[in-house]
Length: 97
Image (tube, rainbow, N blue to C red; front, side):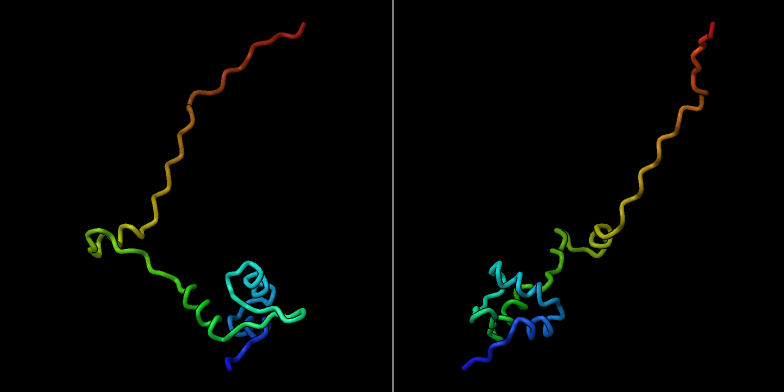
């Protein structure tokens, strides 16, 4: 028989908050069985969950040269600020009578 884990044990194993595990269980991202008021999760399901959550690398550029990869990872240059009009603002000439 396969070993089952509690949501708290899975949270400790994944180093996440227990509420996050419950959220994954309720949304169906992580399969589990609810027994009474507690969930039980198969060890193999946790391993499958981790396998699907692996970070995938960026796809290579069409030419695959290191220069194209380096260029794609450079930060964009900041935009230049628009210069203000150097002439002084126009004043309205109102006279109080």
